[in-house]
Length: 141
Image 1: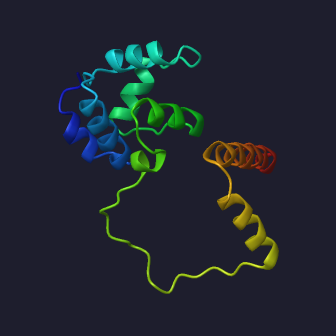
Image 2 (image 1 turned 180 degrees about the horizontal axis):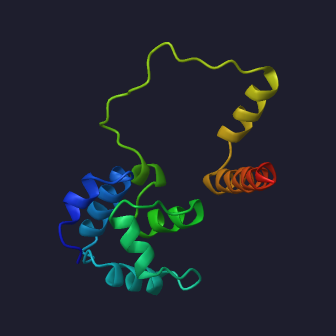
């Protein structure tokens, strides 16, 4: 168990994820120990191995899981992925006059994306992440 977990989470950049993950683990009666969580997860999913160090960073709000892992965790904890990531009760900090202009092609792509299954959306996200990572690598040179 991590000492002063709640206080450490409040200071973290990923507070909402860490606190929601903690609450979900408590509901499942899983001790808030990185080792215990990783063992329980690894028993359920033998394909993906979760390390205690990774769980510790999630519980402390130091990092977020990658999309594929987020899907496995949310399935394991019987939650929707967005339930782990967002604060439904947080006020909207965006000004009301924020707007975006989309041309017909953008609208068509967005419409197709919105009609995809969750797994298809994850695949699209992974492709976009890979392209963005490749662009970052080439722009540095």
